[in-house]
Length: 190
Image (cartoon, rainbow, N blue to C red; front, side, top):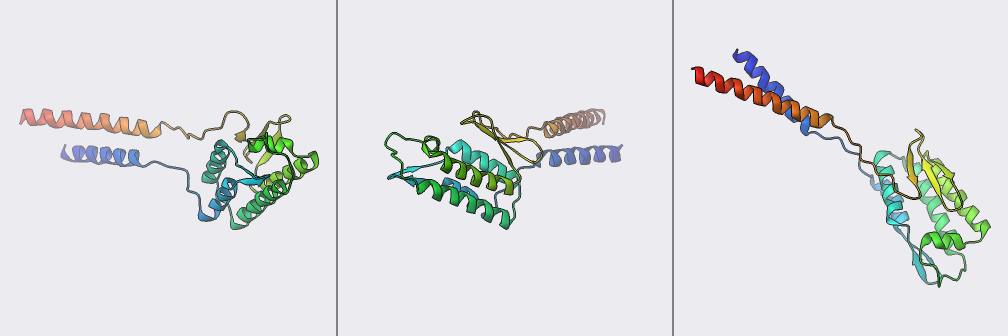
């Protein structure tokens, strides 16, 4: 009977230990951080500096947490981002009534918009992403697996919800309660 009790406590202990380990997205390497730094740096046009929306940067950060990139992929991506930013910054546009980067891009001449779109598509291809234009100002980005990584409108949130750890902890608690009941009962009988 003691071996059975000891086995029960060992199993309970294993349930608790395995229930406490949590898997998380891998971090962003120092090399991958260069992509975020390039995205966080503003574009100056006509004395004003324009920045990407924070939700766009968050989407990029989520993608980088989930995918490991090689140094070559990072270099190509950063190069495409910097070329697009330099192309936009080289434009002489009246920005007095423009207050966001998306409005600035809308104000660009059509040929410059196409060049910027080409650079962005090039960066996406390096990262294994596909850009789909859903209209004049709306687009979505999908991964190789067909999952939506970004879409204009509401942001895609990566929650990674799983209930397996909750179930393991619940089973561990039930087994602990059963073990405590048996020990208490044996103590009363002795």
